[in-house]
Length: 290
Image 1 (cartoon, rainbow, N blue to C red):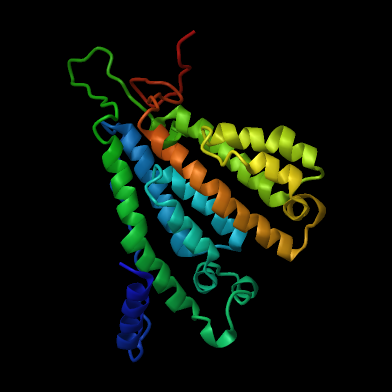
Image 2 (cartoon, helix red, strand yellow; image 1 turned 90 degrees about the vertical axis):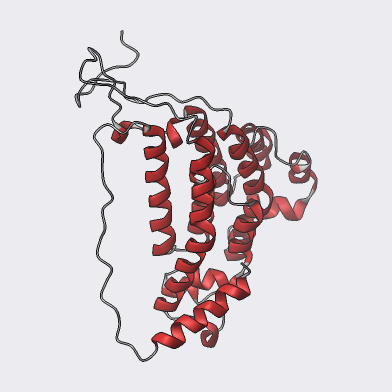
């Protein structure tokens, strides 16, 4: 479905509802919970994906906040949203006006007469979640559904395994994904802040980014920061609004696609491990046992 189709559908939806009273708030629905899910890695991933959807629907404080969310979406969907999808969200001024919810920030991107009201903006986010985000989450869950370790026990089992899902802090219980995501998160955060010198970029930032992308990053980036003064100025010498916009755009175009490819490939190669241990009850234990 194209963006035009989504806008047309939104127009029809809002036209039909113009004369209707505002609906009651949606009741907070809590999904079923299980003390010992048989495939806790799937439960962990599904929880992360629900959090991802909630944050998307709530909207973002500014463009940098959306950029960070795009990276988290890469991890929670195991790379199943294309790099172009993230780039289009971050580079479209009209979409930024629907995704950013801070009143001052959202007015930066379009003229006042083109600005959607809050309810229509949320309807747009809901449409994108339905057509793009949920299918990507489903594909990610499908990729690991049968490789996820199953923990089962019966009443005759002397040592049944219990995995506390609340203790699992790695994406889909895969430490390799968590480690890579943490490196990528650092690269994004530091890139948004800018640097005190080009030495920091060449000596630390780019090498960590290469590691975080499993060498998927463009090989010419390090030399570009050394030789291209206008590029270097945006990351080192300037910290105005234009420089901030440039850094956000540069990360969206040059870094997120490489990080996305790394996460997508790593998802099939990461082993599953339990954080916090396996136990027969809810009490904390040390794992591996000492």
